[in-house]
Image (cartoon, rainbow, N blue to C red; front, top):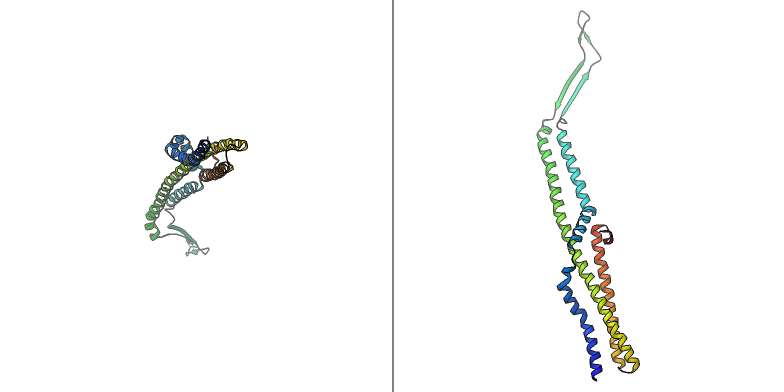
Length: 229
């Protein structure tokens, strides 16, 4: 192999290794691409739109209504009643002696004693819902951040593969011209073609992974990323 072939072979080797090298560089520099202001917007959108968050708010409203209902229901253990007798009893002077109408009140002592506990239980249910809501909010925040960081990583990977494809394509075109001129062997040109095809395939796979990462964020925000400004 003459010096020209060695140079071309070295160029192919450089292109083949460029993807790995750039991945390492991406791991060192992708932090610069993290937009924390935009991340806060993603978090706010997820908190506003994600169904599970709305369910907790609905449950809190139900718990509050239950507390108010228990407070206003203090008189439920008291049952007033009256008895009406249409027959009137007369005395010797033919004057009404008994009207035939009686009033009464039933008191359910057990319900009265249980009322404070029912109110307390209603309040505890609200506290439990609020605690679960707070815990879920933290879980949601972590999940949004994880998916956003993965999204940024995959975006950088796509950019790096795009650059690698350009480099491989440039080398392939150069070798094609040289091969047509008879300056390089077919084997060298064929290896460059295989290398270009391999990197192009990896780029497509990276793009699919990037789109998947984007979709996982939109699953939480219920809004396309393009619409979150």
